[in-house]
Length: 170
Image (cartoon, rainbow, N blue to C red):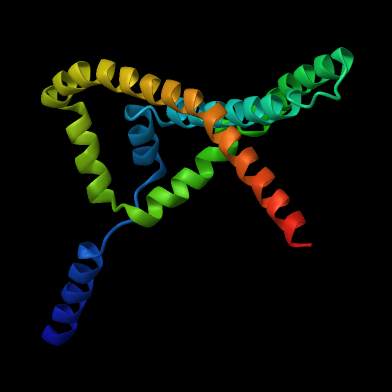
C-alpha cells in the first residue's frame, strides 16, 4: 500500500516538474505585450516593398522599354505588393509563431516574461528605449536603401566582366 502511494506521489511529482507547453492564452498575451502582430506584418511589408522596388529598379534600367511598358511595370509593382500583402496576413503567420513559441518556451518561461513586461521597471525602460529603436531601424533602412544602387552596379559589373572574360577564352 505504501509502495503504491509513494509510486503515485513520485509519478505526480515528476509529471508536475516536467516543462509544460505554454497555453494559447498565455502566448496570445505574450504576443500582444511584445506587439508581434505589428512587428511581423511591418517586417513582411518592408521586405515585400524592398523586393518590389529592387525588381522594378532593375527592370526600369532596360533602355529598350517604351514609356508605356515602364508605366505597366510601375503598376505591376503596385499590384504584386498588394497581392503579397493580402497573402501574408496575421492569420497565416500567427500559427507558425505559436508553434515556434510552443517548441522553444515553457509555460514558466512565458509567465516570467509576461511578468517582466508588465513590471514598472520594464515600462520605464521601454519608454526610454522605444524611440531609439525606431530611429536606429529607420537609419538601417536608409543605409540599406542607399547601398542598393551600389550593390546592383557592382553585381552588374562583375557579371559583365565575367561574360567578357569567358568570351575572351573562347
